[in-house]
Length: 116
Image 1 (cartoon, rainbow, N blue to C red):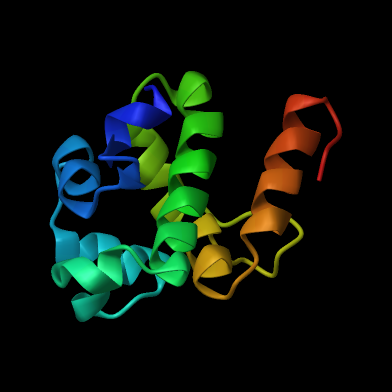
Image 2 (cartoon, helix red, strand yellow; image 1 turned 135 degrees about the horizontal axis):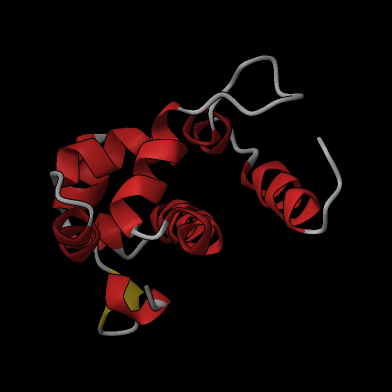
């Protein structure tokens, strides 16, 4: 899925993300490690921290979607599949802990044929 599908007015839009992933904005907030207000109040949605967390999740989903064939299955992987070499943590847990770059590096390594 194209990254712009998750955006509206030049920002990542929690309502669009929730709609595409067939979930709620509350669940999206929990998934990226933000409080409920971060995605409910317009001023907080526009904050750099909120946009960064949403962008990180969307970038990760966008990288793995071709492997799984759909955004929904990519989202399920993101939330539930423990990543080798990360003490059994999922991509979601790593993003919530501020380690999105490590997840993207892992995905790039797997795609390059390096076994992590």
